[in-house]
Image 1: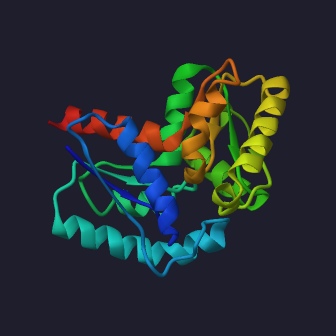
Image 2 (image 1 turned 45 degrees about the vertical axis):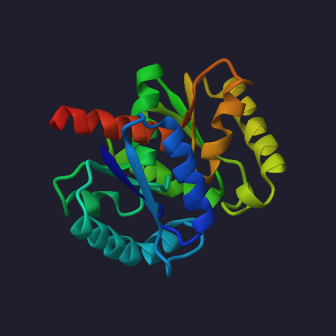
Length: 219
C-alpha cells in the first residue's frame, strides 16, 4: 500500500515530522511519501494562508498523482485546506487530518473538543465541522494561542500550554475526546495521552489508519 501525504505549507521540517509520525502509525507494508509545496506560506494560520496555499497544493497534488499510483492521499493540515476540491479531482480516497480526527472522536463518545493553535484558525475549523453536519457533536474549538511554527521552535513550552488548555476542556466542556488541531502537534499526542483519562486524538495518525482502511475496503 502507498499513501501520499501533502503538507500544504512550505515548512519542510513539519513535513518530516508528519512523515515520521505517519510511518510509526502505518502498517509494516505501507509506504509513506510526504511532500510539501515550495512557494506556499510557511504555516497555514487562518483563511488567507489557506487561500494562498491552495494553488500550490492543487499543483503538487496533480503532479504527484500523475507520476504514481497511490491508495490514498492525506492532506496534513488541520484546516483541511483544499480537501473538497481535491476529492473532486480523483477517485483515490483523499482524507484531511481534521476530517479524520472528527470522525474518530465521534466513535469515542458523544462530544469532542478541538485544541488548536491561534484564534484565527477557530472559525475555519468551526466552518468545517458545520459543513460536515456534526456541529452538535462538537463541544467547542479552543485556541492555545501558540503560533504553528512555535510548536517546533519551543516544544516544551508549547506542550505545557496545550496541556493547560486540555485541562480546562476536561473541566468545563463535558467532552469525551480531545482532538489536537494542528499537524505540528502530531509528535506530542502520546505524551499528552499519558496525562489525561480520555482519548487524545492526533489527526495524522488517525488519517493514516483510516487511509489503510479505505484502501482495503476498495480492494
